[in-house]
Image (tube, rainbow, N blue to C red; front, side):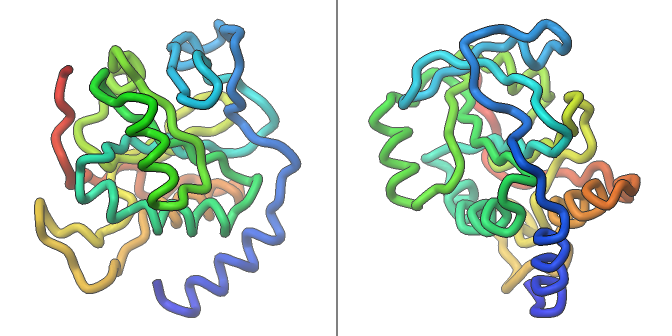
Length: 199
């Protein structure tokens, strides 16, 4: 990430601080959106649903502990969480029922994740979002409206192919524009990654 872009984004993040998160975990369903009716599993807290809160943003990221491209983006996602603080809620969503609690917890510990992980055991949320690969991000506003989805940036040029560093920062740009009250200029870029397995 270029120094100018990074420093500019840090200033923006410090100016645009909100006081609480959008999608807090809850045991109670919120029937205002289909997304809020989908149950997830957390190895730390058990069952949970997504719930609405104050106006801010949420980045739901489909991840897989056994996908090298997902692992590659853990640092970037941590940096985004640190950069924007409570202005954005980052959540890792692990599609499928193969992920045991120990696997999820080890993944979070090994890569020092600063955001929670949830297992979408029956892939209801992944399908609702129309996810295709890991990693793939879905940026939502406080009402659950999709603002951007797809690739986090253009670091991945293709399966198994990486640029030395990204030159386009799709998620970062979408977050900045949204926090400024602007329309997101690029709402979709096809993500490269590991294809979701239906198991």
